[in-house]
Length: 607
Ligand code: F6R
Image 1 (tube, rainbow, N blue to C red):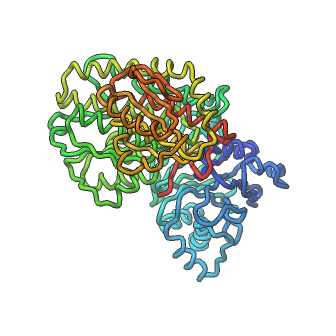
Image 2 (image 1 turned 90 degrees about the vertical axis):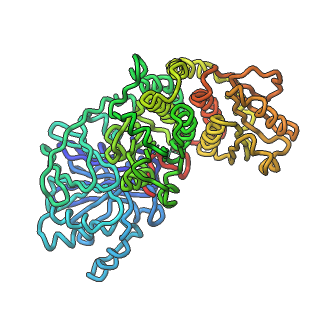
Image 3 (image 1 turned 135 degrees about the vertical axis):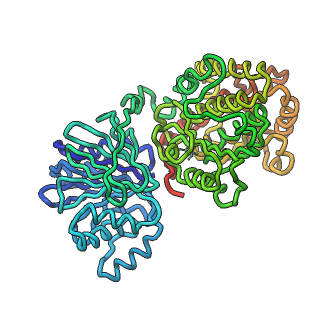
């Protein structure tokens, strides 16, 4: 997904901009570009391909400007090409703009501007922005006013940075439904769509809210609302070390993040389970309110949605409240039944996923209370929700989510216990056992990760395959979905996940000699039935990787991964780990880019 970096200070801007873009590479992109302004002249350098290629562009080293904007583009309107890359200029070369998001009414604006004599050089929606700014500048003779008027005409989502030759010592930025942060320095200021891009320069951040405009000089940061009334914002100190965003000696971010899971889980639990009943910072639900609920919705995308599927079982078991899990992009359009008796929980690692944010706004507009679960403090979703609670997984850089998933399931389990304690809906004995089991998780994940050699060997054996199956029952099925998604994402192997009992209703027709089936069995009560399902595929020639915490008489599997025992409600936090490791080593065997799989982006800020 597109990334934005900006700098205004006394140092040469271009190396800082390129360095920032390199740190955003994990988001996925197809082209990159920068613009700097010097002596009332804006210079733009951009091209299709990697950020590092910018260093080869003729003249890049001659850019002496100390103010600049930069962008990595992930094509939405128009193919990846130099012309379509950002920054884009207006026809008079007076304004340069980079943009994240989608301008939904760009065709209408483009037509209006074309009628007024403007010409367009790219296929992008973005190019209307600098020209619209120019159009209003001619009327207002004031850069800030021109940008504010242009923003009011834009429909859709945007985070923009604007350079102007008329005010070469200023930069103006604005946002709506697309993230943007300002990093405050000393005699210099930084801008980015994502914190890691500029974390090595500052720890003091301002988070922009929708419809805000910021005017930056080297020594000042002035915030405005869309009417250009000055507003005050609080600085937030981000305490992630810059090293937290680096690889720490691991080959890839994904492997590092898999190994960070014990700590991420520990940090997410924090002191929540230390004494007595759970208290969650921001939440203060009464028993009456929770009793009044007739439904909980959990809404998210991809891996975060899979975390929600695990939570459904836990919430229903402990709180006895019907809980539905939905894909955010579906939820919005199916007219879900929501009222003030609905509680809606939204899970998003990045906190910037457009579909999830839109689904949250919908529930809010219908009177439901909303809770955001995110890994990024101050992210868009946490500012939209009535309540926010955080996973403390640290920055997740690899596109394929690992530590965010396990931290989300942990936090959702804690949330379910919190509800159950307020509701008094479960026996203390069950609650205490579950709390104890949650506290044991970090050490148990460490144990699983201590020796992954048999998973590595199995990956070596099967990496050339083209189809695989993941089977499980109950919460093991939720893990099967996640294991299958991890494999698809980073190894490009087609895989399907099924509730084990469903196989005989159709998909078993696909099982043939030699096919690999990954089976997850962590619930004693479901073991016999699950083993019968596995026997059915073994009979048809399948190779089996078994992930289990049960003793099994039949050990006739091609690979068996024994994981520690825990409460079946939270076993996904352990059983997913071997599946993450399997996907990782298959991808490595295939020589693929584990951290940046093709066609994927870390933060999906378009719907
Ligand atoms: C898969 C993955 C995605 C994300 C999804 C939601 O490994 O990372 O499926 O889980 O795009 O992202 P967030 O949690 O940032 O809303």
